[in-house]
Image 1 (spheres, rainbow, N blue to C red):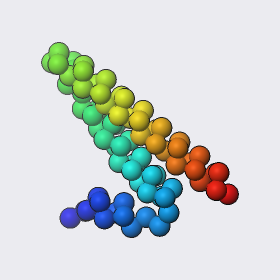
Image 2: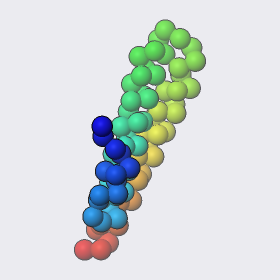
Image 3: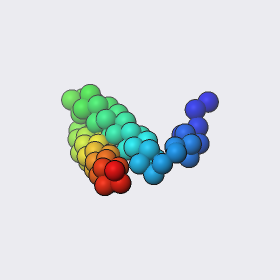
Image 4: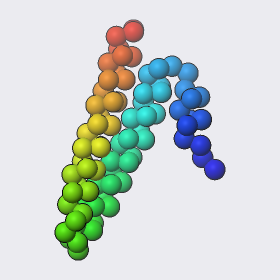
Length: 75
């Protein structure tokens, strides 16, 4: 079985750890977003989940941009 915490801990640098966390947050946000967008046509309550998925995806993009900024600053 895939252990996410160990996968993040195996990253060698701080930027790699942030990139891996950003990847997980992006995947979670995209999954929520696509799940909610499919079911929002059938049920009313999924529109809130659609917004939560969109904001989660946005947070993942911000984390990834922050990791790239740290990497560029160190070079």
